[in-house]
Length: 365
Ligand SMILES: Nc1ncnc2c1ncn2[C@@H]1O[C@H](COP(=O)(O)OP(=O)(O)OP(=O)(O)O)[C@@H](O)[C@H]1O
Ligand SMILES: [Mg+2]
Image 1: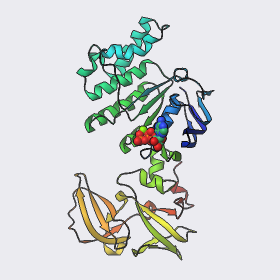
Image 2: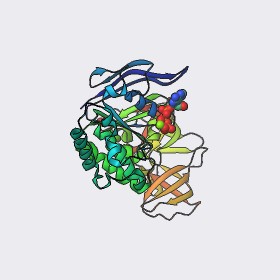
Image 3: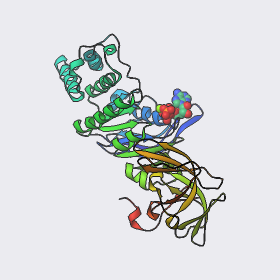
Image 4: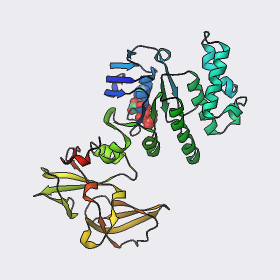
């Protein structure tokens, strides 16, 4: 098992810098997931670790060894891409063995053992003699992963490996990747995805990237429950956390843009402009006496297990999204009162940084 350490890593293409100084410690055996908006530098960071791109500044260590100028092969990594790029004229077996046959020093029996072990882990033995065109998308992606396994890497890098698969196959292959991490006895894995569920379920820790910088690193539950800032609060979770512009005055909260008073205490020490955050799933229908917020239904979306209700709070702000369990029949234009447990509310300063109460129960260890 090998760790990966980045210290002040920068990457520029010509005059354009796309990674602005990344500090990150990936522990041996850890499953780390990179998320962030398109163009934020996820693939670049992965390619930098792989050695497909050279860094412009900083230090990159794999397994405690400085690898700034090491070739991809010397780094002991294997990468799986979104497009599986199998050789169409080679069988599954040949595709998986190909990288090893190029290394003249690996005996045939060793290559065979490694291909069969990878095929066993991924349960693709029945397809070893087939050509890639005779496989489904999910099976092809498993062969691509198998090709990476045969190289016996210290670190696996995945760049959106499931994004070409349909929804059902994504779920199945996601579970296989989780199982793979277990069966590989915790080989270090770094995984890029756009998919919230993949990030939440696969990651030991998630790295949220934005414009070439790290916004926060933490376990999935830390990011969900205790985001450091507005960006992370709105990026993790779906639908996104509702963010209401507000002001704190004499310990009370009033919504900006004409939204009225909110029946909740302002966090200690907060004054002036701030943001109030509440997740759609933390809001519930309530009687007027218990209401935190009151508004008018503008739209409902029944998704089966939940109903999304969009509520106009009467101010100039965006409608609030409320996620209610089951099927809920609410007519457009009807008035709803919404309650939330006070401890589910999040506050962010005008600068976007989380305002955390001193109470220890809000912090995850
Ligand atoms: N070879 C290159 N030359 C110049 N700019 C590049 C090059 N490769 C990437 N970039 C730029 O670097 C930035 C980060 O790109 P990157 O591919 O890492 O983003 P990403 O987070 O993987 O996005 P996506 O989610 O769309 O895959 C982008 O602005 C991109 O245009
Ligand atoms: Mg990318």
